[in-house]
Length: 77
Image (cartoon, rainbow, N blue to C red; front, side):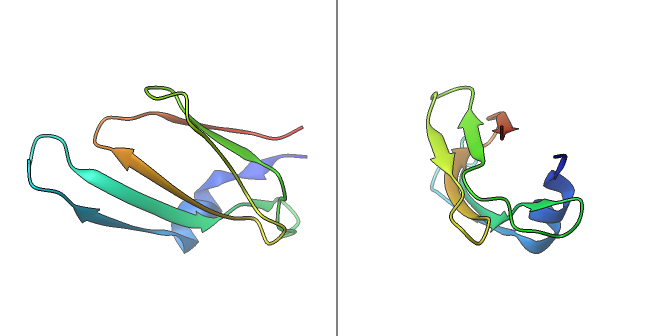
């Protein structure tokens, strides 16, 4: 099953806040769907910098706090 991360970013939104313009905190939230538009439950979003893992719910929804420059990977078996 191929995951369409672009859909998650299309339907998600990010809000930027923070005091230091160099290291802004971002809350990224959205949905992950399979290529046939089915929500992907239990997909993992892994932040490489912090090793924090966030899992999507039954609707494919996720919400993760990141910082400018962080890298995320989406994984689902």
